Length: 351
Image 1 (cartoon, rainbow, N blue to C red):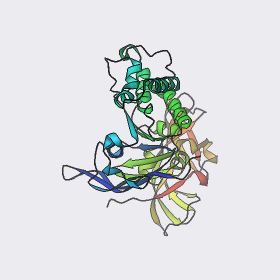
Image 2 (tube, rainbow, N blue to C red):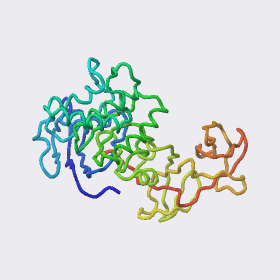
Image 3 (cartoon, rainbow, N blue to C red):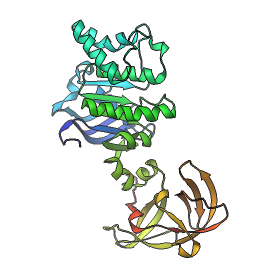
């Protein structure tokens, strides 16, 4: 449980490049002590620019950035209580692993015994004890990533900024490192601000996820809420897989989509308001045609390892359905979805 103590606050932050390109557009966000928060979004959405502003590598065109209530923008990057781990680890090839980790401490002229204590603690934390004298060129990409993290953490920052640090790793190692990063963050009790375009990474590691698009924050919340209750069609489509349909709400708790009337649990819409409807593939039950709320024909089947992904064409819409039971291409099936699993969102219009 993350305590509700604000460490960093961004207030109406905008960043304009070249006089017209808005990398960030009126972003407001707060980050709590000991929180693992992920900035999630596609390339060009502004997430790395936001991270660089916190780190001191960029300055906003307008807005405020506060650290414990004080102006962070007035503090140069090297004096901020933050460290950064980049996707390209930028390790020093002419130094061994021990000296790579110790580099920043030596610049600060820290006593040799204190440097040794801290470096050995970091090596133990990243499971690299015994590698002190090795060259960074003689270890794997995953091990280099661990050394980059150790080098950042050895300075004992209050905040660690991570800019897609797992992007260069293969899938299996990336999944292992996701769990290890979360474990490190919990053990150290410091704030992690993580940037990624990978929604699985965000859902796996984070206390809080901020979904970004076109320089704006679309939704902030804990991973389960973001997944279960997307605020708009962009979030629903970016987080996980979704069937997104046009719908109409004749009244509260009733929605029409795919030429069919359904009960739902959503309220607060105007009569006959046009809406976006989201139904997750795993929330659709395949049954017999007679028992279905919708009838359709299986158009394609793909085995995904733990389930089959089937496209079912009802005529009005082609639904993506996940099921552990396979239904052959061409077979007629029924589709059922309970009211709780139908998510209604207001239509978003461009400003």
